Each structure stands twice: as structure tokens, then as C-alpha cells.
Amino acid sequence: MSLSWSSWTRTTRVIAGTATALAVLTACGGNGDSGTSKDLSGPVTITFWGWAKGSKDVVDAFNASHKDIRVTFEEIPSGTAGGYAKISNAVKAGNAPDLVSIEYSSLPEFVSSGALQDIGDQFTEQDRAKLLPQAVELTTLGGKSWAVPFDAAPQAFYYRKDLFAKYGVAVPRTWDEFKSAAEKVKKADAKARIATFFPDDPTTFEAMAWQAGAQWFKAENDTWKIDTTDPATTKVANFWQGLLDADLVHKNASFSPEWTGSLKNGTTIGYLGASWGAGVLKGTLPEQSGKWAVAPMPNWGTPASGMLGGTSFAVTKGSGKKAAAVEFAEWMSTTEAGVKARISSGTSSAFPAATALRPVAKSVFDASYYGGEDIYALFEQSGATIQQNWAWGPTTGTTNTTIKDQFGRIAKGGPTLADAVKAGHDATVAELTKRGLKVEG
Image 1 (cartoon, rainbow, N blue to C red):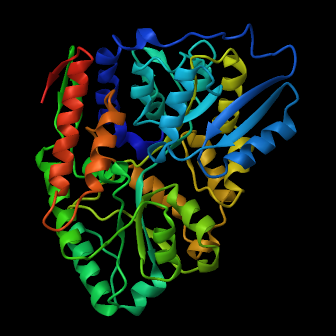
Image 2 (cartoon, rainbow, N blue to C red; image 1 turned 120 degrees about the vertical axis):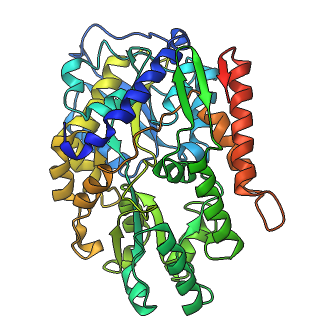
């Protein structure tokens, strides 16, 4: 295990603890047809849905190098932008693809709904040993293996170093410094802002709550303890409410034309994202090569990070091609060829869960976009500071849909971020109760 990730130990104990509560839910997961062997007797075609950058390049490389399995790829919207709804609807209709991308945060929801297959008979202990143990635990629920982990996603702050220098703004190390920097940016250019609040993406807010030390879900024995209105979350909500009220940040949908346009014209000069964001900026704004740099996420006085996203690959319950689907998923996640194919696309900066492949990713990623900065070293440092107590529950869809709807209504004199998070709390408790689970919160 990479020592820089030792701070995850307690986190994963908490996550592993959710297995107790999830065990009563995982019985409805499908078994599918595992196939007799990974040595398939003839060509088989599998379908794969995903949205991670570089996915098509990975599929093309796999198809060019494998004769027994052929992958048909369909790019779908990111999970919170409609991808998860598309997957869920396809599973219910009986026409789901064989393999799907699912972020760690949403995996328990799909498992509890019976949408996925246990892949433990194909994704063996030997296979799992290639991956960060903590990432494996994120995909192990109820004592069963539900997905192949691909990456980890510590937070990072991307900023236009040329405009920071022009405006005389120091790179903020703390959130207090971030607010001061935001004020300086606005004063220097009335149209410019240091960053953007994404009303359509609760996961960015959740990562910041995670960073602050929040723990929304906690499983003890057969009871879910829910707390989305704890002091850490309240601190984050009040901080961002202040930024919004003072018009110190933009408010645009993530990756929208408005957001992209503001990056292109320099009216947004920073992006609070994760390790995979380096590839997003590089692919979205190639003309700004050399103008961007990466820094650790601003913190509350002590270096800390949450995790924003993180992808795994899961086999849907209706697939009769589990062996082939898992073989492809493992090729993407655990082989040098798979990682090289994705990173060399120029659009991905994935931070592999296969720790041995991180040097491969670093060697393939063209860091000239960031002035030659060793961004993978920064990701390692940020990963080492990931807060320890966060865990995901089985109702992420309900929680995030409610918060997203409320975030969209936030305005001066109207609902606040705290109101939105409280609504998410209430909806989560109601949904767990509806499912017949014991809840405190």
C-alpha cells in the first residue's frame, strides 16, 4: 500500500462498516452468467457506457489488441448530469449495457437497488491485489465485490497563473485566503471571478464538506445515522453562501457553455476540482497551454482534501457476459497499455487506483500545459490528506437530486445553501425509512 495514502485507513474502516447495513440490501443483486472461464471460446461483443475522458481511446486500443472480445462504446452524460438515470432506466427496461461507469459515491445505491452483479468470481484476490486496498474496499459491500476500481480523485485547485500574477493575487492556501483573493480578483476586474459555484453538481459541495471533516452517513449495527447539518457542513455552507451573497464567485452549471466561455475569456480564473480536472482543462482549453497551474485545495487551517468522484466499472444484472466485461474492465484499470491509452489521449489526467501504474500515467501525461509542473506529485500529496471519516450511504441519488433541485433555487432573499442541504437530509431520512431501514437523524 502506498504510504501517502495511509490516511485513508480509518476512512475505509467506516466505509467497510456500511457493509453491515448494506448486507440486507445486496441480496437482490443479480448473479448473471459468469461464463465458464476468462479464456473465452470465441469472439464476444460487449457494450460499455461511460463518460470519463479518454474512454473511446481506451476502447479503440483494446479492440485493436484483442481478438476474442470486442467492445462497443457509447458515451453518456456524467452520472449527475443524467448518466445514472439513463443506466437505471436501461436496467429496469432490460436493455442495459454489459459494463457501466459508476462513481464510488453512487455504487451503494446501484447495489441496493439490485442493478448490478457480484463479480467476485471473476475479479479475484490476485486481481484486487494490483489496486489500492482502499479503492477495493469502496467497491466491496456486504462482503461481495461489485465493481473494478479505476481511479482515486483527491481535490485540487487549478488557477490561471498569468492572471493571478497580473492582478497581484497570491495562490490561497486557506479558505480565508481564498475569500481575500476572490475580493482582489473582483476589484481588479469587475467581470472576473476566482471560481464558480456549480448549482447542478452536489458532489463538488460534498467533497468540500468531506474536506472540512463532515460525516453524512454512518452505519452502526443495523441503523443508519444521517447528519448533513453537522458543524463542518454548516461551516462550508455558510462560507459559500457568503461568497455567493457578495458576488465573489460565478454561479454556472458545471462544464456548461457559460462556464467554458468564462474560462475562455478569462472572466473565470480558477477551478476547484479534482485530479481528473487537469485533463478536462487541457482538453477544453488547448489554446491556454502554459497559463494554468495546480495547487492544493484551500483548507481550514490544516492541509486536507476530500475526494471528488472516482470511477469504478460495474457489470449490470442483465448481462450474460460477465467474464468478458470484467476482463475488459481489468484491462482498463490494471494494465500499462490500458492506462497509457487513456492518458495519451491528451484529455485524461486520471490518478490510477493501481498504484504501480501512477508513474506510467505521469510519464504519458504531457505536463507542458501546466508549465512542466509535476501534477502527479501534487495529487499524491493531496491524497495523503484526505479526511478520514467520510462514508457513502445507499441513497446518494435521492440525496443529490434533492440538493441539486434546491441549489438551483438559491438566490438573494430566497433559499440558502443551508436550506438545500437540510432538504437533502430530510429526503434522505424519508427514503431510508421508506425502504424499511432503521434511521437516526
